[in-house]
Image (cartoon, rainbow over all chains, first blue to last red; front, side, top):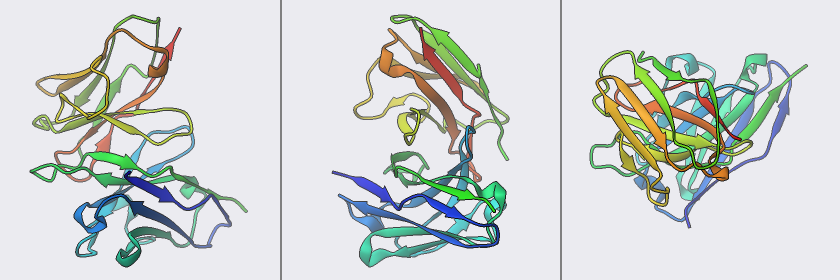
Length: 122
Length: 107
């Protein structure tokens, strides 16, 4: 069955870095784009961007340019999110989400990781 | 950016009732809209895409419709497991944007 399994919770100090992984199984990893979504505590969903799992090309939403990096370990069917110079406002749950197959490449998400809670606190 | 104005922020309804949740897009998104359900501590689950297409495995009591830039999610015959948060998401243009969410409580 299709699964996206993310790494465990993280507790970091401001200024540190964190790397979150999202391991896919049950399908051909490079056939489906992977998106990243942020959810601050008690808040809604915010789209961070996506990575083309075939070419490795990332695209970032404006609010996530600079300190955020999407990467792949395609041989391990894994997508990664790295956040550097962490700030208190980065405290959130981060989800990876697979773009479902549609003939026009519409960005709907049919499978999600379980989410990774990142807490930034001094 | 396309703003998705979602209402109501919360609602409470009884078992068996029908409820409706709305999302108003700030510009035409040409039916490029999805609805997700999220339960506490869990990841979102896709319910509806292309405004009215039911995702595989989702009960038929969920339905989506549109009128201009207004999109609606209707849940018929409410069940206890329908309690949770609901979000709309436009997929017409980057950046993808979500509505602010609706918290549904089953009385």
